[in-house]
Image: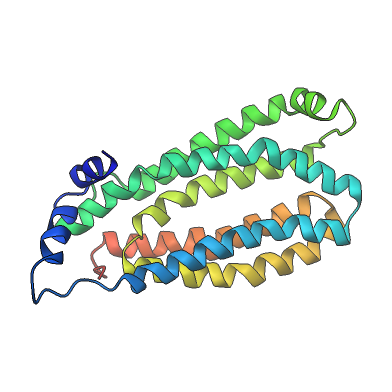
Length: 235
């Protein structure tokens, strides 16, 4: 059922691939060209985010670590919801790329819409955070406004950059994203190590936001704009 729905969404890509797979002499695309960038992003991005707790545990207080962990439990599901919603953009952009037509939806318009959704959802979560913290910790842990504001910004930025990544899912686009993620790792870790002793729990989030904006959101937006202008055709 999933294959049938996907085939209809991105036709004629699936049908053509199935026909070419059984046609002698037809050489398809190399799987490795898209597999290794996906692998890099699947490993590097969680590693960059997971390093926040590790740095907090060594360079800050137990209170800061527990504050960060509790806030993350509230806000991270919102990012998961954004990622799940963003998956619907993949077949739209893939079909347009396969047929050589302009995408029916603008990645920049979708970025603004996703950012708006992320901002509203995260803001609601911030308003409910006091009540949720009371339930989760029995009143032992209270969340300060700096960590809450930074999580709102973090979710908003992550939501805004997702449509650009969904647009760049051909081999060349995935390679570009993988290189940007590899650049993100040392920048994110360096800023986290620098800011955590000074700011506590919000420090890693500030480092993550700066790293995502500089190494993912801006480069991906520039690449998307170049493609939309037709100055660089994806391969």
